[in-house]
Amino acid sequence: METGDFAMVKERNLKIVVAYQGTAYHGFQWQENALSVQQVLEDRLMPLFGHPIKIAGSGRTDTGVHAYGQAISLRTTGTIPAERIPLASRGHLPNDISIVSAEEVADDFHARHSATSKVYEYRLYHGKQPDPFRRDLTWHYSRKLDFAAMQEALRYVEGTHDFTAFQGAGGHQINTVKTIYEASLQAVGDEYLFRFWGNGFLYHMVRCLVGTVVAIGIGRKKAADMPLILESRNRKMAGMTAPAQGLYLKEVFYT
Image (cartoon, one colour):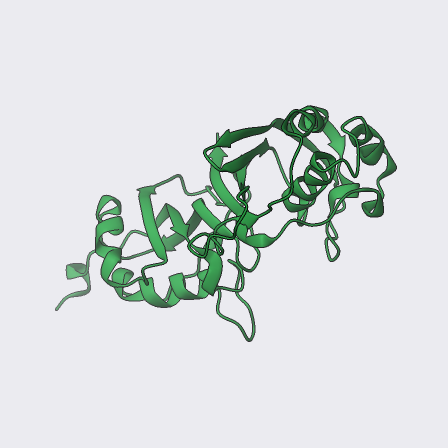
């Protein structure tokens, strides 16, 4: 066969949206001695593309945290059409990870660097008794909560602030100033659904915010304390870090 008979293989850049239940995984990003979502994706999707792949995620999620819309990007010389990837991946992935969509994107697209904002949701189950079917998917909290006070506290979160007071231990971001476009709370049946939409988030930031708002809900703190906590830049001024299992990465936005 002459050299000219070989067709040039085009490398494509793909954006793929992944949903997963994080209960069985030590977060999204590769870990040395623990199973991660990224490891499963790279290992299990390799036959689909016909070569080893390296993916970039829009951000980390911690152990036990879930995602409806984690965005990843990868480069491939595989020939499978992007629109066929969600269906074709079903036989390769475990039942707690699913590909929602896939598309070809510009060569300079990167799942993390190109992201402009993200939406996180947090689910708090406000029932008297634990629900064994929701134990890995919500934070069960049975104490009486002042719903109006919690909503008021969240209004102080919106806008551009230094969120150092809500950065978890182990977080080392230099730029701690973030803009939150929406911080809201609604009752959905017997659950409280928190929603945070912002241009960036610090380590454990959403979980620290939820823990602080719950402290306001039980009267341990006041809604009017929220601006003081923000201004203090002191993690000890805020409330507890809410458990991981109630947190969901809902959506990632790009220009």
